[in-house]
Image (cartoon, rainbow, N blue to C red; front, top):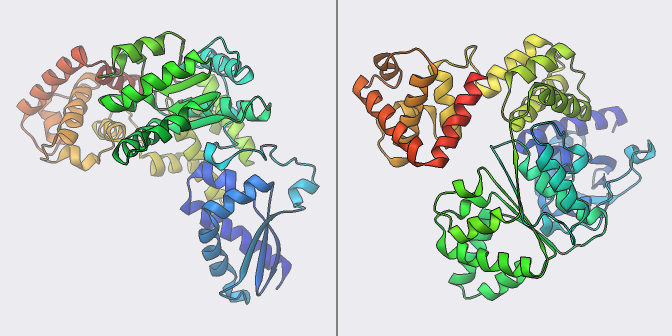
Length: 447
């Protein structure tokens, strides 16, 4: 096999894997892989360290085998080839780049090495949350912020800071007794523990830690049995001077149907909010991520992206991934026109953010429903409530009349929009969660 052809094939293989994996997952676990050697009967890949290689074997080996065979079959690779993934003398290490030091990280932690403090672009929008998280990460066994409650809208970096705390604890060898889980994972474990009479095992798992990290704690709302378990878990850890950090998309008191005693516990420590980043911070985030990806973005493009995507850092990351793909896969030069085209294709952004169609897309995205459902005649609670909110926002954020809005929602009667507007106003007065969501959408539109 020709060496140049082999390297090109492996590069193409990675590009195909990018389409199958989440952007963060691809960059953390596939992009660093290197092809060490290949024969018709064996392919050897190199990883940065043993933790990295173990993760690839446990999570991505079947997909890798499939793509490697498709990529190299025409060059003589046998179908039952042996795939080896080992720590090796990689080209990147020869260039002086250091492998990630987190060789002790247990796979159960679920940490992404990219989510370190060094990779978090801090601005005025996140000063307090970043400083508090850094302080906890540096002093896990003696933090003055316990519990630490980090809140903010979707895609602003709450999970990043949560994982950064755990990573810092391991990097500095403060402790390996760390438990990281999403709230949904915790809820599922409690339910399964109760169902199969193994709740004592679940309790032991979460109590035998020095640091507990729970993401999206708002999902405890309406979960009475799980709230009861978490309340006693919380008290036990705090009593034993163990650190607790949780994230949420809203303040403790705004979490609907959360027991008052839990609200009180969360408010007893440090509550730090992350706000949408300002223009300069967004530009800094774009520069940092573009540099990491090796994307040569002009200041004009950086400013355009920073002015266009205002409230969600994940959207910024997604756009950069698509720009990178156009450059590497299609060989396209990165121009402002190309970036505008990518924005329209990926985020479905209209030229006018206050267009009715764009508002419908924004609301449907927030509530995880299809835009077509909001225009349909479906009357389920999952559809009718977001539809009413979308109608309300269309009326509040634009100059369109009730009949014009009704026509845009599948030709409905204008009295439907009037009624939706009235009901949503009542929701805003009585439901802090809905009020926060609507205000976030209106803020995004207005800015």
